Length: 102
Image (cartoon, rainbow, N blue to C red; front, side, top):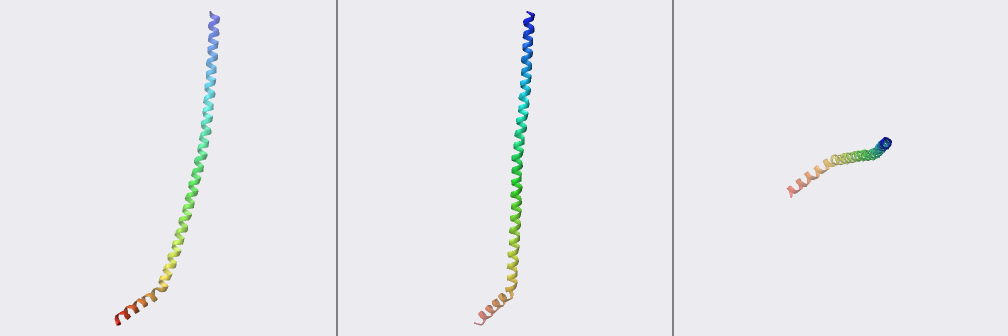
């Protein structure tokens, strides 16, 4: 009787201890797996961020290049306008004066 109860209690205690150890191992495994997944996610997100930053820098450089090109073309156009303004006005006045005398 008592011997059987003591043996059953010992078996129950052993089973509880094994369950506790198994639970602790599963918790540690879950923590390790979660830490690994977090690290992988962090690497992926950092790579995405670097790509976005690179694209942004590329877009900024492209915008600056377009703005500089536009400014240069506008400057050249204005220079041609200034250079040819007097000649164009003279031709218009001459055309109007010639048309009126005919």
